[in-house]
Image (cartoon, rainbow, N blue to C red; front, side, top):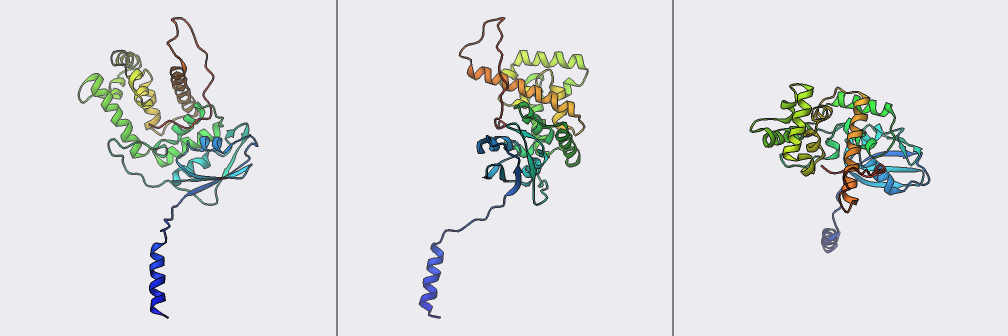
Amino acid sequence: MDISAVRAYGAQSQTQPLTIMTTTYAVNVSGIAPSTTEAQLHDFFTFCGKISSIDYQGKTAVINFEKPSAAKTALMLNGGTLDGATLSVTSDVVHEDEERSASREGHPIEQTDKPRAGIVAEILAKGYILSDHILQQAIEIDAKQGISKRFLNYIHSLDTTLGARALGPDQTISGKLQTSVNEAVQQAKAVDEQKGFTKTATDYYAKAIASPFGQKVRAFYTTTSKQVQDIHEEARRLAEQHKAEFHKSTSPAPAAEGSSVQLEPVKQAAPADV
């Protein structure tokens, strides 16, 4: 072979852009309503985790996630309702949860770090319909997989930070709340009134832990022992939070004392970052 030709080929190959192969984890979705848009599909399934791409073909779609745990959560939503249609969510392969190390301080929590029961509570809170069978699946996955170290560390960090600010060094909100139910509610109310955490905190979990329901909320997100009813209760708390935020963002001025504003539930929106 002509050596000049080899050199020319080598020079040409060096100028070609490198193609970096990325792995995605796909689920197949069918039974999609004709009126459902790709954006609606994205909003619904982004509760599971970050989406790489969606191949939308009308009544069917292939949704590619960045992580296998997100795809596994999506499979759990088989039988969920979107835009009035019951979705079928399947996969050609088995998706398993990846190894997840404990989070570093200040490192944000991703959707895939959250307990499955917490994820389905978020979905219900946004107005979507999930059967109790799906909620039970979420509970069973949490019981089998456990709660991720990243999420447990995150909740513990909030607990100790709020405890130190409200009660003093080396104190935790949850530790103070464990004395008795009545004292727990009164202490949480006092903390909130004095420090205003629920008015100033931007993180839902921080607000919830410092609320009268702090003990229940913390237990819901850090233990695997729960019932379907617990998910519905947390969904109601989340929905109330969404209503409050929606009211705050759309009201030009505070309502007069004694007045009431009825808001429609906020539906079909992506989960908020924490």
